Image (cartoon, rainbow, N blue to C red; front, side, top):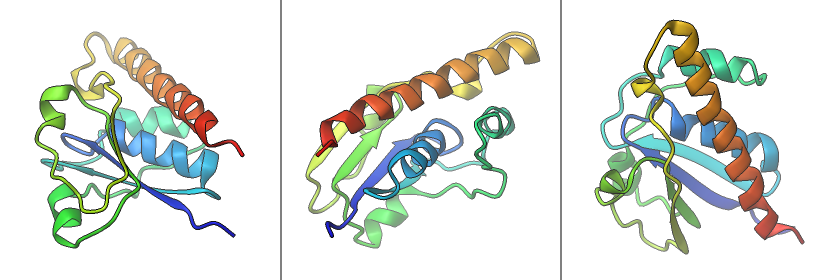
Length: 144
């Protein structure tokens, strides 16, 4: 049996995009991949993100945000490091030892969604659905 590929998703706060990506990859391909997520300046999971992920049957309410530099200091190894924020934040990413591939998938920040609560949720759902679609598309590269 082949070992799982390790994937780290990174964004600024580890409060939304990276957590959604981690959850979807583990859900859709947990037999082949092990995903984690972290941020440059971790805060708390953004409550509307918890709400829209619950609609997908994924519970993020007990998740704790993590610091990417702690993972780096621990010497963790990843096959893929994927930033899900804009490129300016990607440049802050430490270089992990042994990385096979680094990718950038920029998605809108859920915390910057504007409008009424319903409009904000609609924007966050779009981001959620885009992340899920990106992961499904990426997984096609690994079909045996």
